[in-house]
Length: 337
Image (tube, rainbow, N blue to C red; front, side):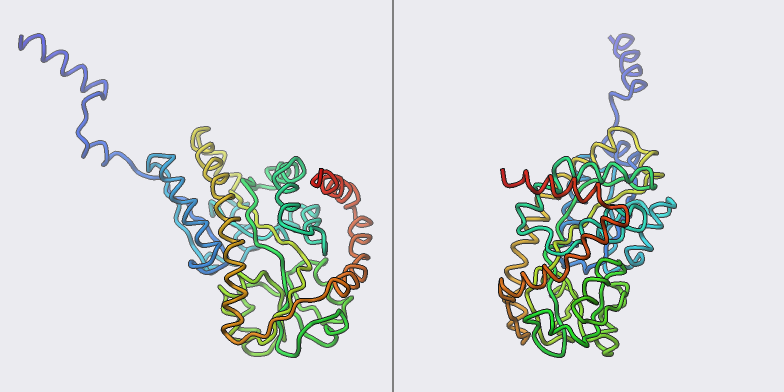
């Protein structure tokens, strides 16, 4: 009996069938994935990164471990994007406006008053149009996994409420480092000041700028209510985020590992959007409780702003964006069908 069992036992061990739990655990060395983002850890962005990390750990059986780095601790969006392209960082989530630096067609998302509501945005971003734009990123050293929601952008300042575009006159307004934003707010009469987000709170606190524009979630999570008095709900731009991966790093993953990240990203998209929209409703109430004076721009005045901003579409088209703009408008027309 002994002579029968022993060879079988040895063969099972050699085949790796009989291993102690401790030995198996010791052999697992999770691949660390640094995931950088700009907002605070307790923001909707931070919560989505945490959910994504949990999903990756579950789907990979612990072989992949995502470590989040919030509050721009790995650099601003442009710096992180460059780090991904160079292979020095694995993942990030950032604004589509930042991607304009590698593919100008992403600027189509920054055109003013493009989407009327979240449903239109979801349909376009998750459909053929959104996927087609993401499909252009690998040639630029990036892989786009999915779109998250930053939300509709609104204006805050320390001077007075914005009820019509003439109220922007003379206001030093921080905008993203993007020509569409600069041109739009300058056309409204503001003095548009391009600036990295990581520098914004200090600039508001020291009155280097009078105001800024961001979704209400970001206004709350970044504590802009401490240095801003007026919030004007303009919904002038719907701003998506893109979860991106370094192409150099991605190419070194197995197909199974790539699938884990893509599946986790798809799951995180639904979580993040639901969380973001619920948070936006809570944020408006919170900001009012903190003493911010909130006003809603009338439909008539929004139309005036929309008409005033129309040259941005013409300029974008003339600068080589005519095809992508036509494609997006076609996708928008189908979104209501």
